Image (cartoon, rainbow, N blue to C red; front, top):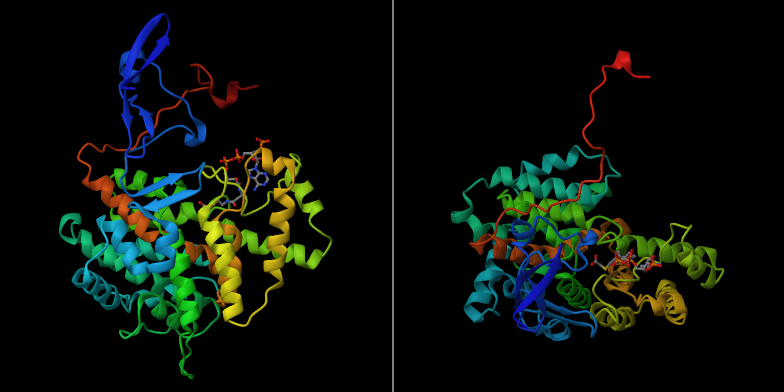
Length: 424
Ligand code: CMC
């Protein structure tokens, strides 16, 4: 298949067909409007590709997710977050020298400018950490105003290194504790846990089980091709706004409950179910009721129509980590039972609604001592390398133009302005 034909108003128009490396098929309709005067309309971009990309491959029907060709299962089991970040950014796994240099860079860029600590003082104590994070990331641009060309790689490292410091500071601020500086002898994940949970009065020992779980969680979230927040980063990046502005916009898009904000909502939902104690059927019925706003949070996905491989890994990992930590969480049982009841219901079966990455992640975060309102921040730390890789891909694509969708106007036709006195 090399071209597609469109019959419109008695005329035939031909458009080139493009094939991806996994045989995905796209019809290039860039010339559609100039040739025919018509545009395509695809609310929610269900069938619209905004770019070609060589970063992440998803096969939603078969539950396949690969970063740069590597299956997510292998990366989650055998790699760590710093290595995956390098892979996403530069397209290949690092060799020993590249790996050491990248990790050293992440270590030596982890502090934020001392003046920035004052910003935290201005937020109210109950400020949502996603608001703080997006504001702080945008503010980094004031400290690193260098031109894009000379500071591109340095800014990647700065952002990946500093986002966990900003996140940990936001948490410390919310509980009224002093901020803890990063340590150069700790790995990426260890340093985050240290900044989150150490207190000046006590020695803090990082638990290796937590570090392994954290690395796995961050890897599972690291990229997911053209999702809402990544598309936002590309959109903002296409206007050539600075990288900090683009990432800050991605953080805001991620915050929404239909996207990354779902992980917070899942845990809140499970807690309500636990308190209620009245079984699962009534929640399933509420989720099915079109007059009820309630949805089963952590269920459903635009792309996965069979299973979300990230949820499969997380379901298994959550049980294992709780066991290793010698912890029990009644919410894990509730989640598993809810999943079972939902997957036996024809409403969920017919619509291909399965647990997604957000369904089990909260239980794992909770076991690590991370508070519920920080869950989406954890997602943002994980997704950052993906956002940066997409921003880089966009900026290196010489054919990339500013993102500017069209619309079909459905408002009033031209009418005459009536001064206030003359209006009925
Ligand atoms: N509970 C009940 N019904 C649902 C749910 C749900 N969680 N998800 C979808 N549906 C129904 C929806 O009402 C619609 O039914 P009908 O065809 O009768 O109108 C049908 O399933 C298709 O749903 P949709 O909203 O058109 O699908 P979408 O692709 O636009 O939305 C989604 C995908 C993830 C936003 C949606 O499934 C949802 O709201 N899920 C709950 C929120 C959630 O868990 N979000 C995290 C997504 S994964 C992490 C990430 O990538 O951010």
